[in-house]
Image 1: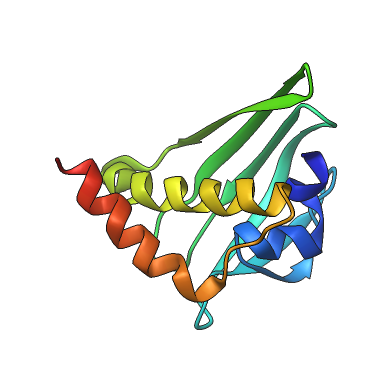
Image 2: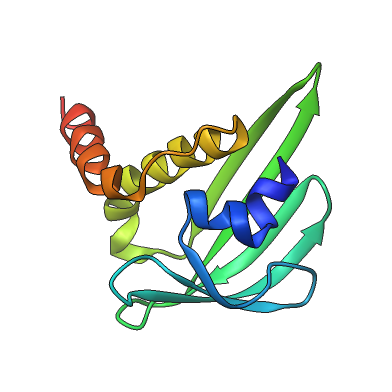
Length: 131
């Protein structure tokens, strides 16, 4: 699972296209989430293969922090994601992370979802979460 989260090829299957840098200890990287909408990040925690932390900064948002914790047991991996310092943006990220994690699961299983489905799936998750 660690390679899915940090490897450039698999990262593009669940989070966005890695356009510069790399996801590794003490590094910075930029991910394009489509149409040139880029998030700049710096790795703040690296404990392979169980913990990754990084800053998260889009040009039109305050900087925030993402942490991924992985725990492997019996051939499965539990993943815990936290995204902090979002202020009033917390609600807007809920549905997006659900979709990104669905894409991560598909990438980990070797059956990546088409990027063109992202916003349709996002809309479905948003509708389900308001019920």
